[in-house]
Image (cartoon, rainbow, N blue to C red; front, side, top):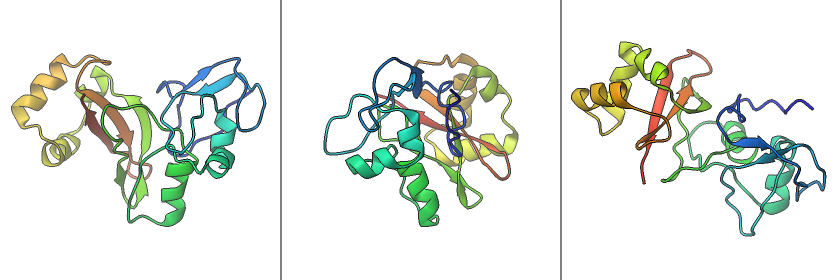
Length: 171
């Protein structure tokens, strides 16, 4: 079965937010072959949700849940789609879903060394202006970074201009 399309999280298996599983979804009661692994912000405790119940909004509605802490001045339909119908991800700190060109960005999980090496100068300038890093720290991090090490670096891509952005997460 093909996974639902998530506009703001195009590869939830690659980002490790969804995995194959034989568990039964607590929302729809079906065994779909996949399970969501990311954060769930709700009052109860939910241990197994399928991607379809996230995509159609039924899990958010049934459990008064959000999958991403995304607060923005963007139109409500974009904010709600990211919060309630887009798989999230685990992070040490509160998630920082990025936006650009009047839209939420696409999330691609952890950035690889090749992603960091291929950033344009304008993309690097954005990092230096919007993070705690100076140019020397950035050069060191770019050369030495290994996925699953701290800081965790998450990759985002603007849906309109295709610029790449990163956010950092540390314990």
